[in-house]
Image (tube, rainbow, N blue to C red; front, side, top):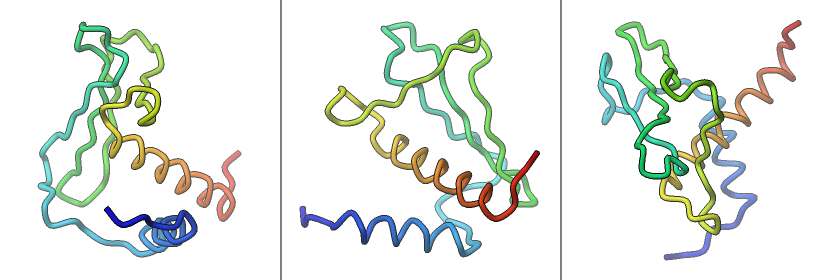
Length: 105
């Protein structure tokens, strides 16, 4: 695999975040769920993302996990959900940028 420069990836992430779009491979009213990496064989503790017919995004955290943090590990930490981890990092960047542009009290 070709090595990608980190500054290029950051630029691409910002470009994605600044332009509204829809990914045709995703379906509305379809839940996309992933169990976190530290379930220790219980298979509990998941996040679910879905989109309503109006395009709004919905995020749910597994309520049976009793409010304990869910961890999606890095490759070197034994991660098995590396794409989810990367997407969450992009989500964090989106929150940071929105907070800078329109702070909430």
